[in-house]
Image 1 (tube, rainbow, N blue to C red):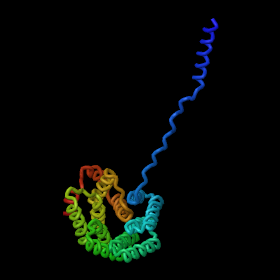
Image 2 (cartoon, helix red, strand yellow; image 1 turned 30 degrees about the horizontal axis):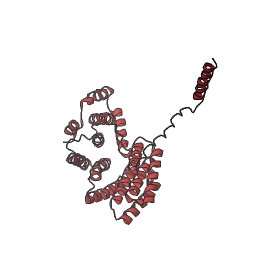
Image 3 (spheres, rainbow, N blue to C red; image 1 turned 180 degrees about the vertical axis):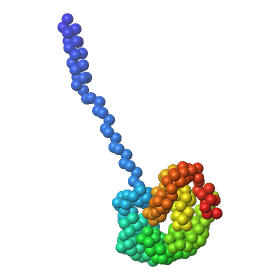
Length: 282
């Protein structure tokens, strides 16, 4: 009897010891994987997108960060692109003083690096600013400088877009023949670069040209298609380019009979870039 009792007591003690033994420890929480940092190039792309969406503060902050990285690493490309981005931001508030400061830095960079492209960007940004302000002679001078350098250096993207930009100057000065030639050349260059291109951006200039020629029905049709395509393609026009479009929209609404205005708006949903160019430009 005592043996049985002793065995039962032993099993009980072993059970208690087992329960009180070391418990299995939970796995330690794994450290979170840190988010991949943006490259300076990605930061500049995001700065441009923020600018187009109207977030100048966010755009400027990113551009300044890249500018600091460029200076620390002595990377001329990052410095130049960041300065160009900041030039663009100065347009919204028509801050010519800030633009002059940034232009001087781009000029110094062009001299120190031996790269004329920074002078091209400087000229382009000044042309855009003075076009916004309304000094068309000054704007034209800078566009000519930008186009001369872009053609010389093979910067065909800038060379192409400045045909579009300079057409606004010609329209504002009443030189419709030159404006039409510039818009045609813009679309020719776009097609040479991409035969499948259906670029809606150039329609802004065509709409402005038609409005200045008092073809309000045509101007409204082109403007309506432009806005529709921008929405479909998630495009945001830059300030110097949207300003004439807004002017066109206000003028045609004031000039057209409401019934005609609404009819054109409804019918324009079937129009494309190609059909409008065939109708009003070619």
